[in-house]
Length: 142
Length: 78
Image 1 (cartoon, rainbow over the protein chains, first blue to last red):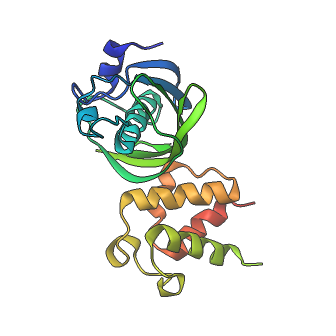
Image 2: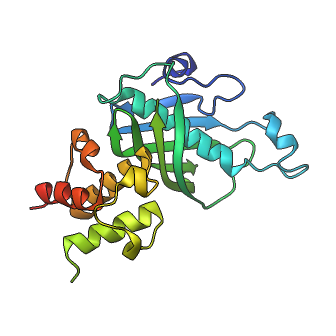
Image 3: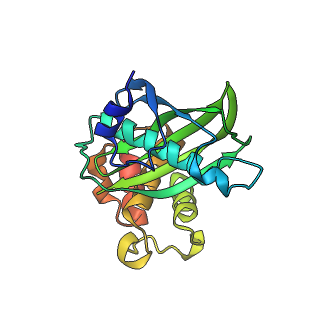
């Protein structure tokens, strides 16, 4: 298991844009399982939507992307460090159920292909064992 | 049954968002067809998935035209 200190060694993102809180499983270059605890105090809930808080799908994608960076970081083909710039290339994600305050988002990322300059991954987001989003992301690393 | 050539042409066409019949097989992906490095990686991954093969990263640089891509794929398809 990796805590937030460990995560910050892998990811370039920082407050207020860290979208994973903990990594439960990390199989080098093969699989990562991370969690994001969704709190009502998140600033975006104030506007998305007033009186009806739902986690923006774009931020679920961001959580998937950050977990994917951890996967890339762990893979052998990467010479990863925090100086690297990660840029999303494509996002093909289907949203299946809304995510509300109090939910714990569990993200499972598995590679389709990882090379030294980028990756394509399959991503799954679940809450309590129920799929909330799944899809495929690609990103380049510079 | 379409051959490997047609299958890869269609797969490339989908990824680069161009009609298959408009892709000159010798046109340069990057200079002529607006392909970027991420699309090239997607093409590689799509070929791997379709034919259940694994193509090493070193071969990525050889995917410069449709014909070249087909040639690389054929090296690995049994």
